[in-house]
Structures are given as C-alpha cells and as structure tokens.
Length: 307
Image 1: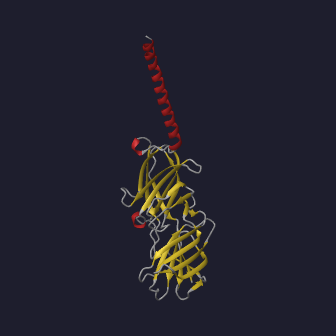
Image 2: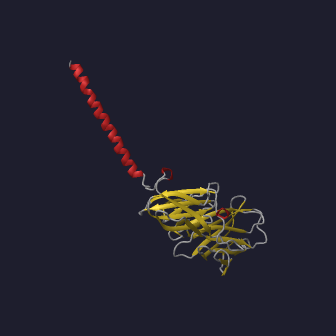
Image 3: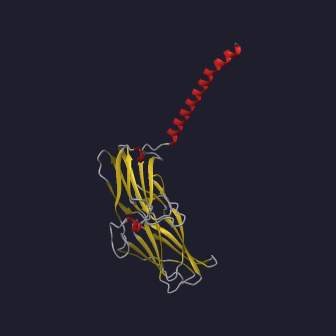
C-alpha cells in the first residue's frame, strides 16, 4: 500500500518538473531572440508590411572622351548592395541585400517594411566581395582578387515608408578619386614585372553619409606590367578635410627585387576627379618628382602632375 501511494504521488512531481523545464526553455529562447534578432523589419515572405520598390534610375559615369550621366548599371559595376538602416547607435538595425550581375532584377529591390523612417543606402562597385556595412559611418571592402577599392557609386537618403508610396528612384554618384600613372618612357626595361603603388593620405573605408573616406590608410596596390601598356591606375576614397596624398611607385623585376623607386609628395586629390601623374619612370635610378598641375575635362576633372 505504501509503495502504491509513492507511485501515485510521483506523477504530479514529474509533470511539474516537465512544465518547469519547458517554461525555462521558452524563457531562454525569448531572451536569446531579444538579444540577437535586432532587425524589426518585416520579412518579404511573411506577406505583410508595406511594399517598397527601389530602382537604380541612373548612375554617374564620366569616362574619357564623353559624358554620360545615366549609364546602364551593368556597364559600370558588377555588384550592388541595398542597405536599409533603422535606429541609431554604433550598430543600428539593418537589412543588407547584395546583388551581382547574375542576380535576377539586378539594380532593383522589392521589399516589405514596417511604416516608419529609414536610411536607404545603394552602393555599386566592382569588387569581388560584398562590403561590410555594420554602420553607415564606416563601410569597408575586403576584396581578395580585385583592387582594394574599385570604381564606386553611392546613393544615400532618408526615406519614409507609408501606404501607397511611390517607387524610389535612386540616382547614384561616383564617390572615389582615381590615381593614374602615365609613363612616357620610350621603353620599359624587359626585366620589370610589377609596379607597387603605395599611397598615404587617402582611405579605403567610406562614410556613406558624407561620401568621403575615414582615417588615413596606407593603400598598397601591386599591378602587373603588361606589354606596350603605359597607363596604370587605382582608386581611393578622399578623406574629409584633406586634398593631397603622398605616392611611392616601385618597379619590381623578375627576381622580385626593387629595380627603381619614385616618390611624389602633396599630390592633389579630389572626389570624382582623376589625378594623372605623367613622366619617365626610368630616366634615373631613384628620384623625387617635382609637380606641375593643370585641370582638364574627364570625370568631373583631371589634375595633371608631371614628374
């Protein structure tokens, strides 16, 4: 009789323990979700929310020889990122949608969002990876195969999501400067295999609010020397409040050794402008270049520097 009584009394205890365990799991799950799922936007597949359509209407592209303010997106970039921020702080809530040329509807985005105010960023570039956009004040690129910075175009606006809103037409503008090394040597020594270009005073990170770079980085690009090619280039972001850069160009031979080096200081740089450095790289073994500057039409302008 005693044994039977013990069996009967154990059932409520097990039920109580199970309920307590389940309640603990649910509480823990709710806590984890509240900590990690900071994005309050309505997912597209839930079928609720306000439909928002973003389309790249034009992209600023000013190549040599002619000006085209509305070039086709796939002619000037291979990747595009749509990023939508909500809230403030160091890590605001966001949605980031990355597209490549192979993506369906490249250059447009359809998404469902809650009613409210957001920051919309559209970033087009030619890197081999997607940008890191944790916060609007610092966007960085981690390209492994292409240059550290590529030709980059930006749209950044505050938007208000409401019922029956019109599609958003995004006009992208170029936010990089271009450095162009133009060699006037009659011949480049046959042993030269690469040019290493080191630039200080510019940046590899972008503030999308301003379209300008952050702190100064030393940017290094190693470029293969090609037969009969005399012009080599690289891209960078211009720092806010700065308008010059220092450049070192090193010629590297087939033994991976320095053949010749050239330095240029306080070279003008500006967003959406080409700084073209022209001269003979191999007339002397080592020298510091002088400077002569003129401005011509190409992109928004070309700064000419003779060395």
